[in-house]
Each structure stands twice: as structure tokens, then as C-alpha cells.
Amino acid sequence: QVQLVESGGGLVQPGGSLRLSCAASGFTLANYAIGWFRQAPGKEREGLSCITSGGRTFYADSVKGRFTISRDNAKNTVYLQMNSLKPEDTAAYYCATGPNRWTCSGYKQPSGYDDWGQGTQVTVSS
Image (cartoon, rainbow, N blue to C red; front, side, top):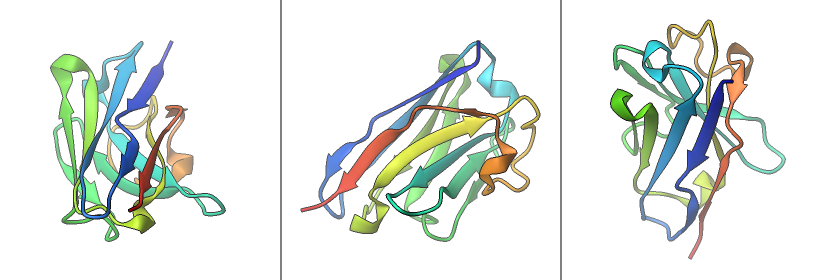
């Protein structure tokens, strides 16, 4: 059974950092592209970043230069390092993939993913 579990969220002050983890089970994460999304209350789910099986990375303009996606295939885990956090980064954060998710093509579209984690809340506030 495919399962993705996010962790690492929490409350952080503006300018602070957090590292989110996306742990996979039931499949070999290394074979697939993994995307990170976020969703704030009343807003649409926003695609933030994607990493291919080969380690190529992609970022939305809203997080480029502040967020870094990486993967540890030995741990079957993908990470999202978030630096210089802003109040507008407050949201629930999700990782996602799918059985046909070989590349990061169209990575910002939630419809391109079949498997999602339950999310982890990030709150940026002083």
C-alpha cells in the first residue's frame, strides 16, 4: 500500500527555518518524481517544488531561492528545507507522487498526482 507521511511542520517566527520530511512506504520513492504543495485556508493548492528520480529540481517563483528540495533514497524520504520563512508561507504542506509520475512535467498541477500525504501544518508568526 502506497503511503506518504509528512512531518516537520510547526510554529516558526518570520525569517526562521523548517525542514519538512516526506517518508514513503509501500513503494520505492527513488523511482518517481515527488512534488511538494501547500494549501492555505480559502486558497487553492499551490505547487511549490518537484524533484525527479535523477535529482533534477524545480521551484515555483514564490519559493525559489528560499526553499530547497532534496531526496535520500536510502531512507525513502524527500525533504523540503524552508528558509527565510514569511507569514504568507503559513499553510498545510503536502507531498505527492503517483504511479505515472516519472517526471516533473506539469508539477504544479495537483491533478497530475495520485498519491498524497496527510499534510503537515506550517505557521509563520511572531
